[in-house]
Image (cartoon, rainbow, N blue to C red; front, side, top):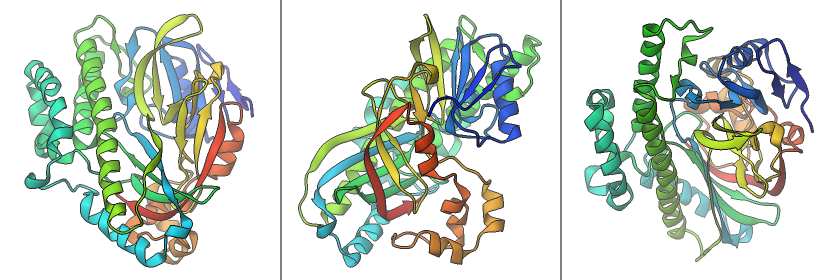
Length: 398
């Protein structure tokens, strides 16, 4: 479905792929579109909803400047998925419960991290030189890291919030493993440090912004190159973290399910990141805050909420979206509102048939707090084509 709304009262237009967008999100989008370095237009995906500074589900192309808070505090957050050679006929409830328990033992969740004797050294070691070079120039980062100074222990860990690990079945009853995570505490610390630096730069240069979370680094200024280096480090760390977790999950499955192989190479994609790309005749920085890249032929993952369908997609290279796609269902209700509105009985009903936590600790992640993923997919028919439709049978939440 093509663009459904266009906001035109700003310096550049905002093109929106849904009619389901609230006024506060529109205000955020308008604030971004009014910045002097935004290129051509702002694109808002069908899962768009309110964020910090920049709207989640937005794609922002910029000339010679980057907004750190638009990239976000979970730099490189994204998805990975792989299809296995086994089918639903190879699964039973007893085995799946064992898989759930094994994953929760092998993959630390929430604020957890690996014990010193279980650190994934081979996965973490390549990141040491880059981080040392960064902290040599910014020793204050070491203080910012705090308890995340043992960042190696977080390689191969899930985190909290809406992060998850799932075992799914597709339309042909093939088994898939899919997970959602990012750069963990170390990425959060890096993001927060540079967001604060950008705010201080705005104050020092007396630049007035409609929202202080739109503070930015212009190319050629003191902190720009270091931020680009840091964000690239965190994005690569996030991708390696997902791959390390995928390996742990596959090992967990192998202990309780029939022998299998990975039949489809893992799709590993960011949905909170920045990259240099060419659009509308210019080389620009493209920030996807809750959006995936969807150039023609690009494979991506668009997950629903726990209890809802998810999709493996292929990009169509839609120029108006800056070759982008929605990254998920998108929240329609805040976490606090969800906890007040729904009960554990609602959670039980909405996750029927899924082996997962069904207690008040994950009530804020109830499917009813999210938009309808099928409507999101219908709204972006001009952005991606659906290759596989997945439905989870196991879900481990952060």
